[in-house]
Length: 185
Image (cartoon, rainbow, N blue to C red; front, side, top):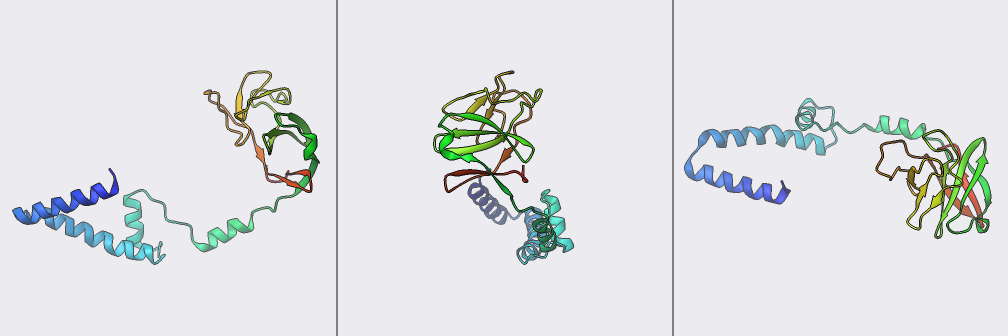
């Protein structure tokens, strides 16, 4: 139900209950407010460990946000991307799919219009190279072996079949050179 509609219906119900004098229903609404109000105050203050806040989050199956220490630990474990040169951007024509190996990782480079994408080279079915695949103008790469189809922008499988997509590597173009981050794929 849409939020504004729910609020309007709740207000209409409260007005009806007050008019008709249904004390039990009004008591129910007051109890719900008595539970939610202090919980929301604690949540707004960032006190997610408070039992009242946790109880209301649990009522709605909402996980408590991670505290700052957990977030900082995850940030510290992030690896800084290491970009490796993959060739001149001018050498990759629009619509071209080119196989390459960078730091021991087999990749395909794809130029779709003015954007360059890097994906793991290997069909998830049997690892066959995708370098001979057909690239459509809307960015779908079709495997030359199995006709599996992948979106080159995301690596997602788009042929309606269940199955694994392709890993995508970050790409940068600097001074006319294609650079691929090989350590974050």
